[in-house]
Image 1 (cartoon, rainbow, N blue to C red):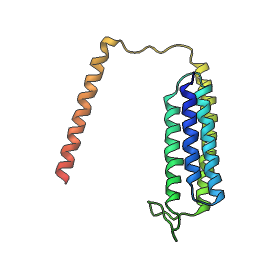
Image 2: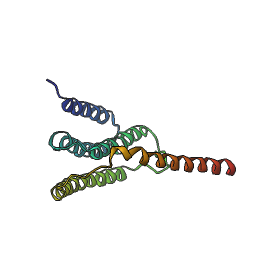
Image 3: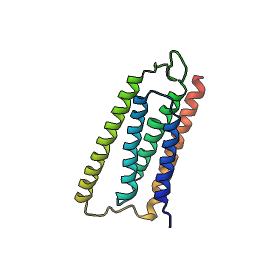
Image 4: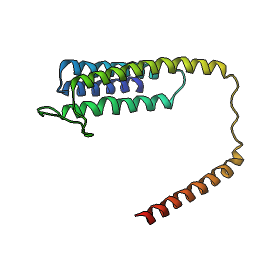
Length: 166
């Protein structure tokens, strides 16, 4: 039987292969994106196969890193093909060494992050022996309703403020 974890890894690899094969940049820029995607692949494999408990935080981190540090920059660098003085959408000039430097920093951060995540997670799981008690379910509506009223009042006040200023 095919596991969903394996399907996800195959889809990730196919997307990265497609993005890297379509990348029109110097070899060293290509390699910097390749190395960054390998680091993220190892984090994803750890998350799917070795982590004992599901972590929505790590899932969100992986998706965010893939979209904003791999997919978006690769598509932007691809759009620079043939331009004399390419610039990012923020008017920051494109230079190969800056992309390589940035990808190196992102990869180093990702490596430090996953090491710290594993060590701190293990430390806090060992030190936390008691299970936390949650609010009584009977009191939950009395907790949610005041928050709803308060947030609605804040929303209405902001709407009135914007309406009078514009």
